[in-house]
Image 1 (cartoon, rainbow, N blue to C red):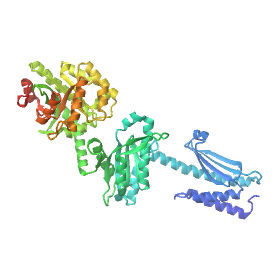
Image 2: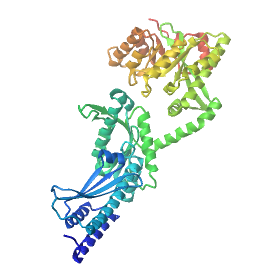
Image 3: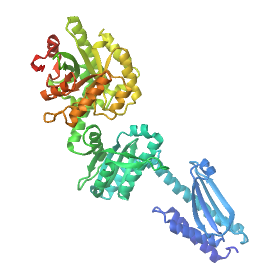
Image 4: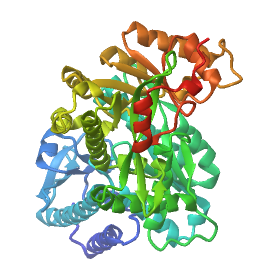
Length: 569
């Protein structure tokens, strides 16, 4: 039966008008009403089912992996009778197909025209809406599907419009040692772990906030102030799955910068918030003490100081404002000078800039490498002059940042500087700290092996406070082990204290491996006795000498002994 009469025609156009209004509304589409209207139209034309499919491309269409929307289905056995397919300008594919039962009166030409009109309307609306969703996904998610920085900025903007910012806390966090996690469980499993962690925190925060990725293992988040304790507990340490089949888990933790938005806070631009949480997070990541840091004005002042250091550094290097100071290393059995460590001191406008105020700043960039080579060159100049003056010499150690490790020309550059001053290689020792964890062992091993092949001594500095100390000793053939001061017992601790026992075994291990062992930070007679008790013959610290300017160190070279501190019992 057709719909030729005026009443049926009016009903059709009334439904079509309603459908167009529902599909083109600027508000959120009422999908329930849309499906209800389409169902009425299907019944009007004796259709048993209507299906719309959306594919992001022809390849997705061929594999059948697109999105299927069923507008109406009466559950009966039916077959397709009409289908429309379009390819959009961005190569997405949209199809609409309608079905009828066998034995039902076929569609008339006029009915087909009206159904095509409805199908075209649906195609247009679905194409528009799905494209909006696709654009939304591309704009506010990264290539791996994580919400991105734009999504974070949009959330802050919406909260600002609703005057809800002062009930929120903003955070920036970085997953700790994630490069090592990838080494341990593999990149694919690491991706699953980071996704599990992200999903877990997103569920914890819920719809009142958001979690977004800036890139790699760096994230930002917004949550309610009442949620903060739970969020920080989660970020401090939480187990996450990395193998969905076996359920295997790994513990992840983060360094976190926190900024609770104050009452009455008005955001003029999102940068106001980003600067604060990034400053706090940077302090948490590089401060070495606190895993969670709350923003304070002191952090901004620290950031400004860092910027001034970076700005002034090139000029200071050209003007040779950096001076070499030498801290003696003493053989505690003989009291004789056995070596020295070259330390950098910055004199600017008649004042000294504390190393803690510029070394960490330069470590953030490759500028520290320029300073290291500057120090090596000035040490070689001094040694060359001492040789020419006929002074007695000792081996001088120079600290080298791990930032150098990826430089394939590092060995040639070191040797070139030493040989430029015709300094015998035996007078140079290169110290490498073990506290950094983001360098492949193979690079470190290559550099240490190359230095030793050139007759240049190598030492591992700050042993015991890094991430994988024993691996460093097993895999890399060091000449010298410098034991960190944290292993040295303090005055009130006896030889049976945990610290004394650990020190004893570290020294014994170094000696068994054929390494020299020197204790750093020796400040008391008690600590000297601990060294003697454990046959650690070399010491460096304030008990013997502070870092000395070159003129004072030269007087130590001339005398070579420290009789005031000898106590040969």
